[in-house]
Image: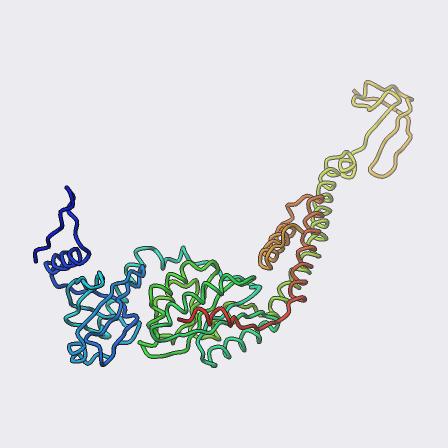
Length: 362
Length: 68
């Protein structure tokens, strides 16, 4: 299509209509392609020529308006709901009357179970490559959390099991509960937002994510990138207690700890008060015994030193039968230093003798 | 006690002090100071246990808003 500008002086000026038609015409040269995204704002009315929805990129929220002729859409017999991941085959188009860019769909395919599984597998590898699942990232759970946050669905069982198990171990536990969607397309963003809200509440030291068992599809939100990233970036440790033992949603891999049931999660996040008191009591008695044994140890060391000192003294020698002979001049070491009749003192191990020299032999 | 430690920080320090005293390497002067600190930590931990008050609350309103 040829689009002619007006010439105003030396400036080429296009009308809005001409501009839009020109761009629209240029866009038709682009090829038809497949685009993957999540369906939001799906709108269909019998009196409309086309159905409309927005494709959303779950990674960064980028949006792309999509339209498809209603007859073509109805022929696909798709039950499209918001939040569903689809592949749209189409070409880019500019709706000239409004200057709106969109994807004109020729066909739409809802992702089957196999494709969903493959998508989770790809996401898992990508997040693993980022290091989100490494044990080095896992934070230790608090021994004695000031406040425990529970994020769960509107199901009585998980909440009841968790609260019962927590209060059985620690009657005075403080629990903050948030309930939100846990399945369906709204669940992942709702869970991610609720998790952030809970973790920010005062004194919350740990968050438990609990959901009973369900079908593979029911547990899909727990493998959603938005929730996985919310768990990874939570300011406090997160325990994942989702589904049954055999299920491994991605939030299990990124969580700081994993529990198979809400009851098991309770055992992880709260100490047994009895055990805690017992442990404290034992520390108390060890603390009180320690200084005494420290003094006793010092006394024993001192006595051992005194013993060694005694062993080195002349007293020990005297005990073995030796004697010390003295005159007023001092110790007698030679017979020549005394004369017959001299007074000598003889010191024994026990007592001493006063004597006189009767004879000297050289 | 300086800035409120968490329960587990206090318990860990208490365990360390007991082990240090039992190890017998501390001087008698240090031992006295250690014992006093241990006593303080023990009382703190016990106080935390005794003063704990159970409370179960729901974070209602804000989650409502978060629902699309």
